[in-house]
Length: 148
Image 1 (cartoon, one colour):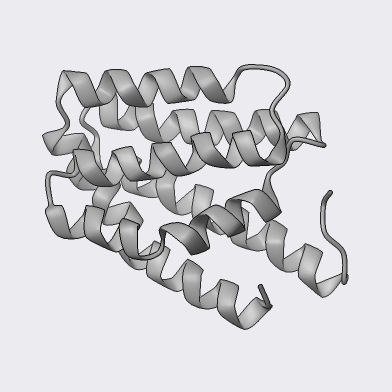
Image 2: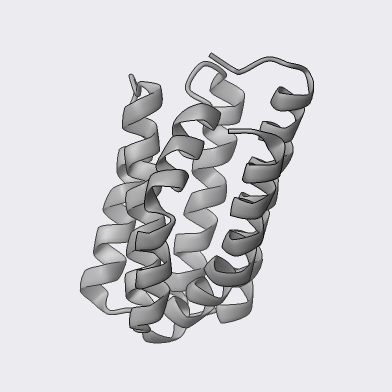
């Protein structure tokens, strides 16, 4: 994935995912919230590989889209799912404990904002996660490295 492709992916994510998070805060069910919290617990489990961390990451983002109650939000997620998975595997922070912890807690902030039905905080937390991912990945691409 080159920087142009990644920027296109981040643009669509920024257009859709904060809105999905805000709607999820307003519409989520207790069952959906329980699934999101279970995924945060999975984030916190030790021993993740790049792939297992990315699988949990993707599952959380798709659960948030589904919790929005808008079938188009989930459909957009399905359309970009393969690109998201590849991006999440590439940028998985499993080799850096500080980044891993930071990423986990940033994702937990989204879920907690959804839990208390704070649409604004949910959208802001999702935007922060997306922007942080973009910055980290862009730095790696510009340096001609990856973070493996």
